[in-house]
Length: 218
Image 1: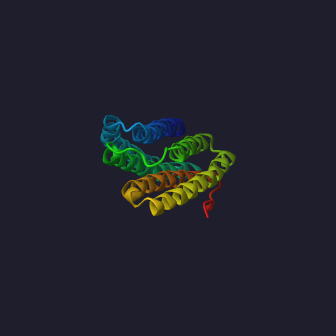
Image 2: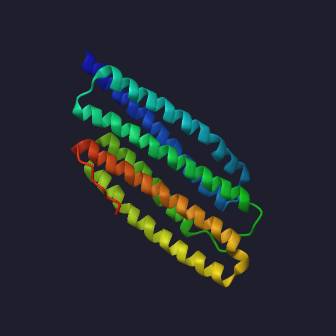
Image 3: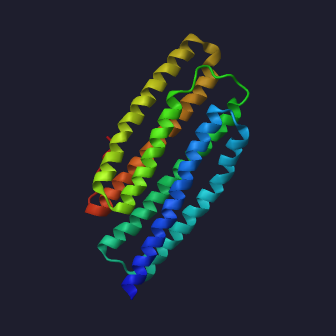
């Protein structure tokens, strides 16, 4: 009976974590769309929703700590719960980066773009996919899915390097573009950090399954 109750609680924990992850994915997509469409109203929605993500983090943290305090989980279950605690921290930071992107939208809303935004939305698409795949790996307890997801970080890094080079060259040739170019560099950096947090989740999934902490993002 006690074991079944704990198993049921783990299922509910996973469902809450997936809801938080889905919201963070939505936030990231909306933030980048607000930028590409110069949609200030959408940017403000992203910023206002950050409080909801923070509340979800606190609720899941409370559930995890209650399970740890009252259920005395075995080693494998302890890793599942402790991994959830790590994941929600990464998810909350991703949401913060989505908010940062939305704030850039508000700063640039009245400016014409100095260059078409092509690589930044693609970079965001990859990072969002990494978040979804990382959470799937957690639910499936899959080392293979986690490792596959982590390899996508290389694609994100390559895009970030390309964006960085292009914007630096543009700002060098067009001094009047320095202000906007700097903000777009910030956006690319925020998305790169989202991918890094997804990688963190993959590493924690591998720890959860194997009991070994492996650094996969060198």
